[in-house]
Length: 131
Image (cartoon, rainbow, N blue to C red; front, side):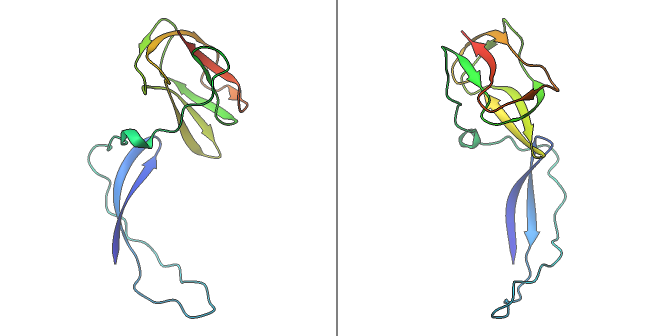
């Protein structure tokens, strides 16, 4: 039996086909773990569907974006004075070897960026503001 999955590696989305064993588990024993056959990644990363973006973090002030979790800033994709559209990726955070993408909750102009790549942030910390 094969199953098609989408996997994100280093921020790039890949479509893979996984081959699952057809063996039925024995009653009372955990299922066997067999090696999985994975197809080669597609030539270009597949863009994530719009519904895959996480919910916008709660704002304390007008246009302020807060960190949804504690982690490390991997990258900041925007600069102060730059125009952004609602849903545009503005930052990437890493926690427990997983990347979390931060999106602009509204269209506007980036008024301040309060963190830099490599900075550690706490949950709820202000990251940037959009006017």
